Image 1: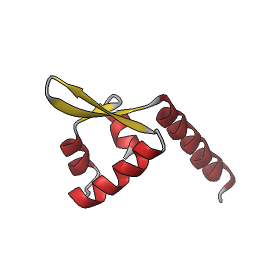
Image 2: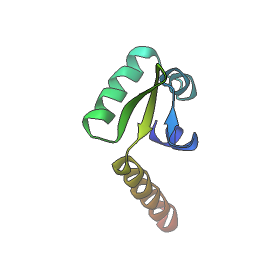
Image 3: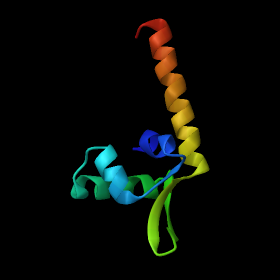
Image 4: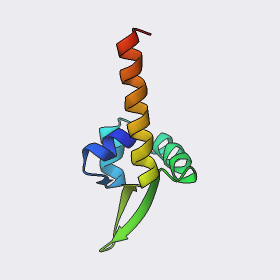
Length: 77
């Protein structure tokens, strides 16, 4: 979900995320609650519309995750 938001410039409408991540509303709500609890994303209301934004901590998580994937690929783990 974080990567999906990042691919959209770090900001996405919840409905668009639900479709892009191929999740049901219930699943998405559970995941979003956890990501918000961990301060990886936050909500923003702009012009009466809700958006989900990646926090700096979220960007840091994506970067570290990508480094781990690259490490795994390099060493064939």
